[in-house]
Structures are given as structure tokens and as C-alpha cells.
Image 1 (cartoon, rainbow, N blue to C red):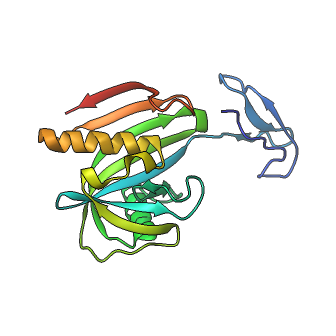
Image 2 (image 1 turned 180 degrees about the vertical axis):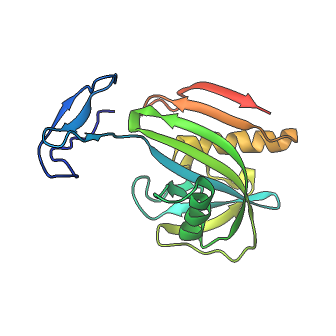
Length: 195
């Protein structure tokens, strides 16, 4: 994905130019006045798979992208918070659900949209949940009840498929992969599984 244009320096307001700094290998926006280099890095998307007995909690999206489709509670990590804090916050915001964070379960790189998705396993602390402002509804699902053709995002779908396969196998492992293209629904270019 192309880098975003930064026309003016956020530090001093002068114009910037796109060029490769010395000892770097990528073009960056550099201020012509103060010399500040403005780096752009991938966004971290953090989510959880909240477990309750043999079910998991999913949210039906009330916002774009993928309005009306189902996903796990998750979203962009904020500055000043850890990955586990982000997962707890997103679950509370989207599902009014309280969780205890477990292990990091999956990590997917999406270089075409400059994102990295980290998904944790989590234990739902109670069943007192309700839709947050970004959710139309929230529900507990068994594996067979999940509307698989209405899962909003590929990293979520892949993680849920792995989750139920791991649960059937009696052993959860860490999953990592890359989804390189925006349209190919099976573009999992690499997946390594660690025990």
C-alpha cells in the first residue's frame, strides 16, 4: 500500500519532501526546514476470542467496514496501552463484556493495508454482556452456530477455524500468517504453528 502524503511538517509547519534518508532504504517524508523525518508504520489491530463453556462471543458490526457482519471484539490499539489492555478495552467497548486475557493466539500481517492483527484467547468473566455503540448485537455461538459466510474479516475467520480445530485436538497453539492480497480469500501465504 502506498504511504500517505504528509505535505506539511507536524513539528514546524514547513513543507515536506518525499525522499530516502541517508542510511535508510525507504522513502520518507522529511521536513525541508527542521529536517524531521516522519515515519509511517503499520497499525495494530487487537482482538480477543472470549470463551464461555463451549461457546465464543461474537459481535455483529454496526459500523463500516463490513457493516452487519460478525467478528470478534477488536479494533485499533491506542497509544499508551499494551496489547492486552487494548483487547480488554475493545471487548468492553464493543460487547460490554469483561474478560480475563489468556495467551496470544494468532498474528496475521496484512501488508496491503499496513496492518498487523493480534488475537488473544480470553475467558468471559460472566454473561452480562450487551451491544456497545459499534455493535448491532452480541451473542455466544457454538462452532456449528457461527454464520461462517458472514464473518467480517479474514484474520478473524482463519483464527476461528484454527481455534475450533485446536479445541477438537485438545491443544491450542500459536498461529502466524500473512494475507498478502485484498481479494484472494485463501491467500494465507505462510502459516507456522508453534506449540
